[in-house]
Image (cartoon, rainbow, N blue to C red; front, side, top):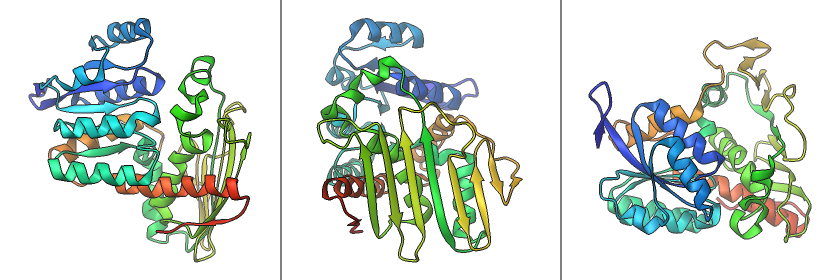
Length: 329
């Protein structure tokens, strides 16, 4: 471990992945003041790898196994395509590295469970990169929902639209095998994670995607979840419509009020101070450092990631069966 300006130890990091999300991780590490990116690898584009190496002032490594052989590294950040997450995370843990793995953590629930077992066995942290839960407004919403500040939840909606730039649209996301799915898995995992964090696992889900053939990576998805108490929760995600800055991305209605999250959190129309949008990656890495140091339990865990994936898996099963699908907890 190195030292930061304040004299505290910094964790030395190796990262696999050189895409846009890797850039967010690099900025989050630097902003946290607790992590120093040392090495980076990933992808078949050596020119892009070298460019990232120069941009971030780190060493480029063409091979992941060689990266893991660096005993000076404390942590591995996995920001690669989803289909290789499990194997890369497992190898890093077995090399006794702490691991932060981008969402979706794995493409199968049983693989997430296996990573949790390995991390406990080797005594190293394995934490999911679900950055959305570190938003101050989201954390406040979770507290207000669980304390019933708005009564019993009746309806909740998660909404996100955006247009992928050409580089991302033609990258691994266009490859069904590498991506593991389309927008329902990619963006929907964020919302499924928040859904289970706020309300737990639903009883059943019904989903639609477009295009709906399994050979394609869908660009639009709508999923509705029903809870035992009658609460309905929907997520609407699309990568073919320009970002809608008007529609709140998260809204919850209860028997005694409502919560709406846009630029900040609003309770019954009144803004709540201290809930403005921030750099979630900065907050996530500060939490990662605290968990490694044994100061606290993480507010995002691989068990929660497994629950989120159960919702997404049920959504895809609903699409295949063209009917409502129950979720087994």
